Image (cartoon, rainbow, N blue to C red; front, side, top):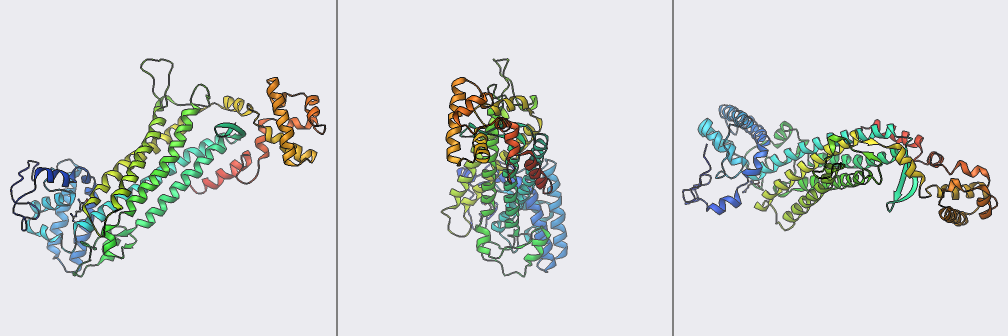
Length: 467
Ligand code: ARG
């Protein structure tokens, strides 16, 4: 195997026929992608085996050459997997590294592998296979996160907490209901992942440089061998398309945004001021100076990883936006963005799944907070509409006066004496106290998708059947 010493002036190793001298050192540095695209080695070898098998089946290469090629490629696979492969920057990328090693191992037959293909369709294939596997992994990880939320939602279908709008106490909800909101979000992310897998499930190999090939290849055969639904339909589009990578990044960015919102809530909930949850030791850190501290570092880092993922999406959109059809070398910059975002997304989902499973929920704190801030004011207004026949606007006004009175006395709505409530509106009876508790408030919200425990359990059953 060639090593990494750079002899810039020797004849070019890869296309020596046309080139009298090798590349300048800077040229080699800007041009080489092996530093990151070696990650595609397994996909590259799988693709080459399928291609060689098809070439032999079609009589384009001999069965003996195919056997040598397949055997050599399998040897290279185990060399790379066991760390016994020396990657060379002079050989530019994973495709040339594998092919050069194949020539050393099996001799001239190696030269027949690149018949009827180009690195343009080869890289499109390798990268698609990689993104497809990553999407499948993401789908599974999201299923795990959804399962964690379903368990917490079931456990806390009746636990009352304040619901917020503008981060101000709005109306009581259940923690189970809040958990199910995240199930909906991550369920949508997973649906997007499934859709993206369907979108990219077409095989690029055989598009060749951009125009297809004159050899009698069978693209349906390679598509099937590589687990794709069918071959792509247009060879120009095939080598110039990176939508599958951009879709992955878009999905990652949206899921990252959801994970970041969850991270933000966990940061807020775990403050001593809120005290709604306590993170496990496994998912928090201490302070080197303040012994009392337990910091939600993992949640904070999930929030930050989202910034990286967004950056990758914008980077690849920008890389692609000015490119004429078909392939341009700019596209080589697609991989690092996707690899980095994939790593961030995996870590973020795994960390969040762990935090959600492990955190201790302080239901007493949640309940106390749920009752503060006059969170049942809407229930009083609704009672006036229902029991005293007031128009909602008038009921809103009467309730506003009751809230002002309670505020001036420094007490809760449920602590106002009946006589004082009746002074505000004479139709109020002692029955009103039944709706002023947070439990009654929550139980009454039985509308489809509402926060009543019975409704939350229905939502859980819906998702259990689909997870
Ligand atoms: N390393 C290249 C990439 O990642 C492979 C394709 C090169 N094709 C070419 N015509 N130079 O995009």
